[in-house]
Amino acid sequence: MRLVVDLVRDWGTSLSISIYQQAIVHLLGGQMTVERMLPMTRSGQYLAKQRYHLIDDHTAFELTGFAKPEHQFADQLQRLLNLSPLRRLHWINIGPHHITFQTVQHA
Image (cartoon, rainbow, N blue to C red; front, side):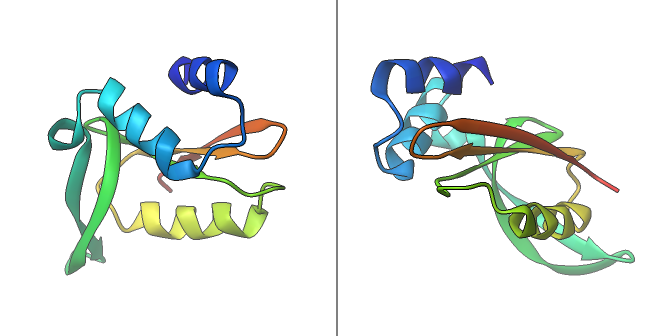
């Protein structure tokens, strides 16, 4: 997401993740546009609703601030995504000195 790269170029990587989150949500159209509660299902059985931050109808993003990207977290995101109606989730990690982007696809 070019938007995230531009924010980090302007602000650096040392701010609280919630500040980046608020800025991204605002720039994508605001909370009413971006934040959605989506149904979670397993084998057609409704489980619950989960809050996602959407880029479009089929794509969400997740922002973290790990010092080093946690590969186990990608596995957790994959399990969560597989229960959702989404097709993909962009995981953006803003570490102390770097940004990583990983896209998790619905299996």
